[in-house]
Length: 312
Ligand SMILES: Cc1cc2nc3c(=O)[nH]c(=O)nc-3n(C[C@H](O)[C@H](O)[C@H](O)COP(=O)(O)OP(=O)(O)OC[C@H]3O[C@@H](n4cnc5c(N)ncnc54)[C@H](O)[C@@H]3O)c2cc1C
Image 1: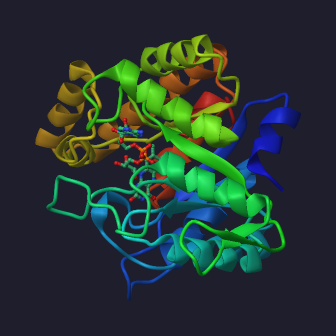
Image 2: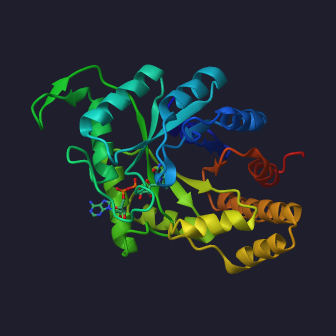
Image 3: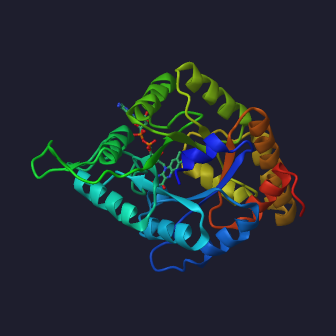
């Protein structure tokens, strides 16, 4: 099933999760333990990251296939075009089709660790909107021909496509209006819904949605939520230079709990803060909550229970 259908059909906010493949050679258990732990909340879909934060690793497509087959949960492959030729991309999308995975988050990809500038593959794409275009062409049955720039007809795929949106702007684009125009290019190429970067202030999301709607874009915009509940996590996020503002009082309180080694209070405070933000998002019209679990269910479960007033 296409993930966009959940947002068309469901009257209640749609809950979904993100998991990440482990570093190559490490156990898959944390992923499946996380999914098992969220099962009672019926996540509608689960996305699987691809070497996020510039740390390459395998597994995204087969793990997505397994989630769909073994758990009956729709899965979404995070698909990056960075470092891949158009032929590599077509081959991997074909792997996805054979795995029965119908949903793809079309991304450019993070720069490799330690490098700040992005280099595209000479026979690949520079921006995510070009990847969306290639996927759309496959959905029309147009496959790469041997001769550059030509296509041959084949069986059409039927991928549902999401693209990334940045409520506070993408860090490489200094002009937020221009960044929104770049997002519009991805939507114009055929994106079905937008998944956002994490943020820590509901107003950032709500203003972002307002600006997007003013541009005439009507597709669902799914807020990506990171259930943070410790100072080291905050430090990690700040170090990534994602262009995200974290409210100072939130930082200071987590720092204070960290300095007295009070993990329990930090976690409780984090859950309450993030859940309160989720409640504001939902009352402001967000179609659901997409939780970045980081393969660790405890805080995310707390956030869901608190947001939706579920029993502990
Ligand atoms: C929900 C979500 C999930 C993610 N998951 C992963 C993951 O699993 N793995 C991973 O490696 N990364 C992941 N990322 C990070 C993402 O790969 C990076 O943020 C990357 O730097 C940009 O990807 P993009 O698809 O938004 O790129 P693009 O949309 O191509 O934008 C990249 C930059 O180029 C600019 N730009 C776009 N089009 C043009 C144009 N025509 N002319 C000039 N400038 C342009 C944009 O303004 C932006 O600054 C994720 C991000 C989000 C929000």
